[in-house]
Length: 322
Image 1 (cartoon, one colour):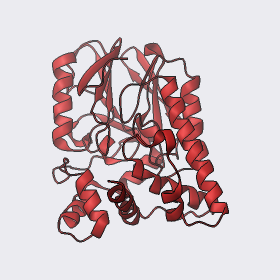
Image 2 (cartoon, rainbow, N blue to C red):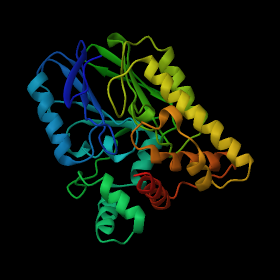
Image 3 (cartoon, helix red, strand yellow):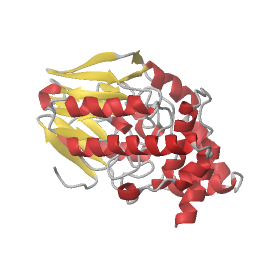
Image 4 (tube, rainbow, N blue to C red):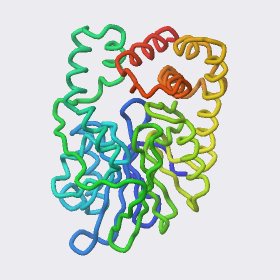
């Protein structure tokens, strides 16, 4: 695998990954699929970045390397609804924006305007420890300059993307990390862009579940005939890296289930579970969200997560451990 450094890496014939170390909160990856040159070719982007400046930097880098930039990329696939994969959509004025129907609905509910408001409230000390933690992890990003550009084409289950002579499969595997996660598989390039189904060297965060869907998505990637796997966060990986993510999810599920059966609260369980070999992964405090989601699953509770409360709990765990 190529080294993990910021910027554009070619991963195959006409396939590129834009990587953003260290892969923690907000530092997401994106992809580019190219066929030919501008004027007689085509290009599609897999995900945009968390704010306007980061996305503009990425598009300029892609244009320098490939000739395709903001005005010549014809399609964008958003792998899921989170802003670090969608907030740059507005810079691609003429592009078709593609996402799952579930992701499109989720984007409506958690807008860049809301993130900007939360960041301002955090800076003003209005959200307690949740705000302190939120402000710290999202300090590098400017949500105020982001304009919403929602999907212009949606699908359920499966769809196809044609980029010149290249074909890509769009495979909905959510709900898992979020409500509508999508894999972008390029068979000709023996590559797959996974969005946040994969966090490599970082702790996965399960906002939606069920956990079995996420594990099944990992198994699906492992079964693919691919050489290069581009995660939503972290360095390029291989099938062993995918297996690590699946093993983490299964481990947390089993540990949470045992504590649920013993009558512990979700918060107590999150603090009690030993992370073992996963303790060195970035953002380990995300276990608070993962256990909360698992408990709601165990209880057949359809209530959506309370993000502010969970940011507060992650903050407590983070500052206690630090």
